[in-house]
Image 1 (cartoon, rainbow, N blue to C red):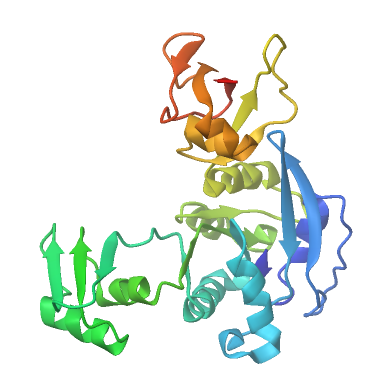
Image 2 (cartoon, rainbow, N blue to C red):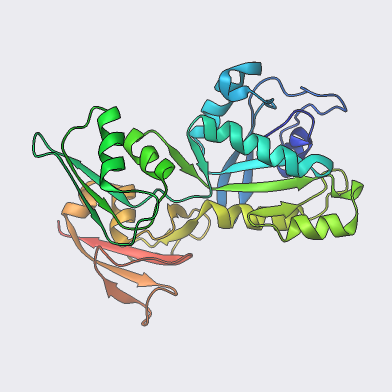
Length: 299
């Protein structure tokens, strides 16, 4: 969880987990990273209450670089905002994260760059480009000491998108904007925030809408639960394997043990991803949330 000082992050952590984080009416009550553990949908989720950052944090102010470095390694950023200042805080925090290479709620541009030893720069575009051309691409690559490369651009991306791909050090993370203290603003403002993209509204003090916030957090994380079934036994529905959305049978084999892929025979799958219960599936079969998988291997 990241935000400006004194926006209720500590109170939110205490409300969602058993961790008691110090909360007060003044700013900078959280001076170090405070972890908490949350159980949701049979999954264990670790929440980190990070110290509040200030404008200029990306340049090192207020130990901002150390705080943002932790955020870069997360699976989801919860940006906790004060309802009375939510619009300006969201803009400032997004800019600070952007300045250190964190792109919120964006997919990595589908641009492929294959560096060669000679031959110059060639570019292939699968869509009409209005922001990029061959000369501009060649100049940007030259600034990064790339003289020869094959470039494939699949959509009409902007110059900043291409530079991000060339730098190859950007993090594309989902972010849920959590507007706190809605009990202090008008219903019209609450409705406006609630209908903004990637946004949910809560009140830690009144414990309002926390359940829906957890639902939104789960959806933004983009994960599914897969249950395994040992041969001759019932599946264990208390300890799922958490995988990214779009995972396949091969993904779960790799998660269990690397030898499972080499020795894979077939898998039996129960759930919404198959037409028959169970169904024989191969390694490339895509799995859905709450599927049950039994893996059979050659000895």
